[in-house]
Amino acid sequence: MIFNVKHVTTYTYSDMVSLCQNQARLTPMTVGHQVCHASEIHVSPAADYKEQFVDYFGNQVTVFDVPTQHNTLQVTAISTVELLPRSQDDLFNFQIPWESVRDSLRRPHNSELLNAAEYVLPSGFVQRSSAMKQFALQSFTANRAIVDACQHLMARIFNEFTFDPSFSTISTPLSEVLEHKKGVCQDFAHFAIACIRSIGLAARYVSGYIETLPPEGQEKLEGADATHAWFAVYIPNFGWLEFDPTNNLIPEKQHITLAVGRDFADVSPLKGVAFGGGEHQLQVAVDMMRMESLNM
Image 1 (cartoon, one colour):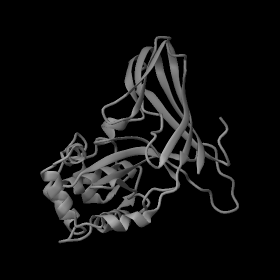
Image 2: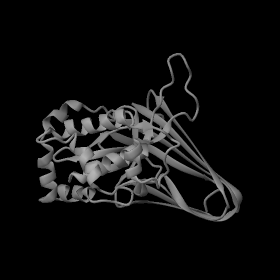
Image 3: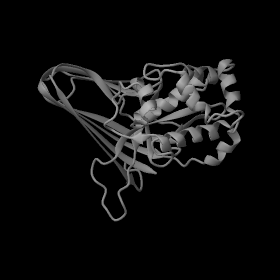
Image 4: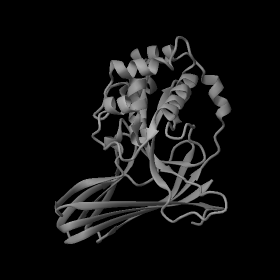
């Protein structure tokens, strides 16, 4: 499956901005199941300085400065991404008890385990707690296979929590998300990660896109696709297996990965500082268009 992705971010300010400096994680990753064939980022007003680097987590980062006075900043990322077929049959070869994975992460004996063990630790937006542990243990019962347990946890979040964009912000504590059982994809990903880390397993945050399909017989609206978030769990000898609790599925044909990290703070698509500007409004539009072949 090949997609042409257009991601437009527009900031509109109440006052003039004299200078802004930004980091953009808007270049899709090339990983085992995904190939980013081309990607470019356009900035308006034009950037005076623009460079790229790869961060600690392996994400492609574009940094840029806009020294021109402006009251609107628009950042457009255009990418061509191919999703490769993935067989879930291989998962049955990794149905090991979750306790075995936990014990391996406690005593990492190779570089792969050592790198994964970092994702057991708490992070800024994901704190371990007894409440998260108790919620997780309802899925991670004794000797249960790790993939089965993760799927069960994902399904419980999907069925027990309500998607409510008006409920939370990035600063809403996970304890409130659990208490009210409401939130958005970001909250559900953070919550799942907190549950998994609270029982000694490694989980990371995934930022990306999800294709939305219109009702049968209707045309797809421009900008109707969305930025999205889900989580991945480390499984020895397999790697990172992804789960989408917002939609109760293992990402395969409609998810494109932008960046990975400990939590949202590591993977924010666009962040920076602006001098001046006053109040601002943010608009984001994403289009994922299927292509029959690569047009390079």
